[in-house]
Length: 412
Image (spheres, helix red, strand yellow):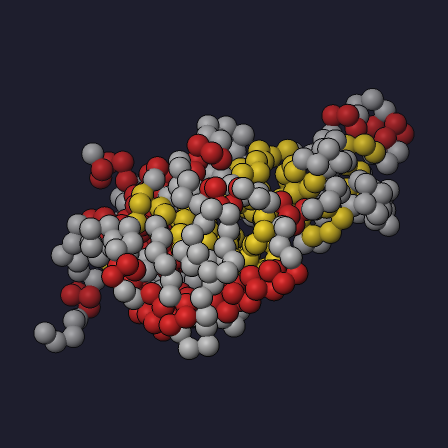
């Protein structure tokens, strides 16, 4: 068969409508803006791990759908989240990525968040505790007691991850939202406290959903020489993709043969509580977060969409808080040899999705992106992506295979 002409190139594939998507869902700026409003402002988003806020008055700052967020640990040891916005003139209160309010800023006092613009101050519970020249300027028309920060729904769940939702009317708790997808690793990550030992981030030129897709499917293990050597056996190909409500999927385990790769050795000496040695579970959560427990290390990916063709991905590696220095070094080495910036696998995934981003820029011709592999829900079946885009269609009310059509009308 010769190469295709343009008409053949853009023709509808000979697949079911849920087995492919229209590339405009990755490139259209209007669709991207709609995703921020309809999905990212409405769902639970994991921002960090509680160990990154280990002491009272610690904080970290984030962004969800362009809304600046600050997460703090108060003296009562509770983690809370607020809009990082002063109610006076809309200024961003804290511009550092992380730190502590234990010591005062130049414009404020210790143990308070201080807006540098006019020195309004707030405690770790979001209460306004000081308005400069309050009586002189406002008399009794505005009082600090009524000027607290915008609090956000915040829960610490599933091994200590901090989840935030911008929507006060979200009907589900984090537990309900997860719909059971964490049950496969829950005992392993909740028996003992966890701690982040590795952090890095990457800003790459591709749509955030492409990062989800490459985490969701294992067919691309043909790209990973390490995975082919240590994993391609009957047990590997028997792994199942299991779908859950709300668009989530997990991939069940098998024993990775690390010692079959030259220079590597078995990781059986160090695992997580109740977790069999050298095992590997992965959880993909809508709208694009990933939790990957592989042997001795837990990897967590969180995404912050920046534009239709740009995403920031934050990578965390976690172990047990009770690790000895020797155990921690083993975990760090195990994690970084696979998932560090110079590890065996992670950079290859990033190269893969940036290649997709380069080939699907805003304004490019429509592509038909195939999600049609069916292998009885086994490891190379693309059921995870089909499940994800069915959920995406519901939230967006757009058909993934034809985003200019309404999902609900087409589903009837």
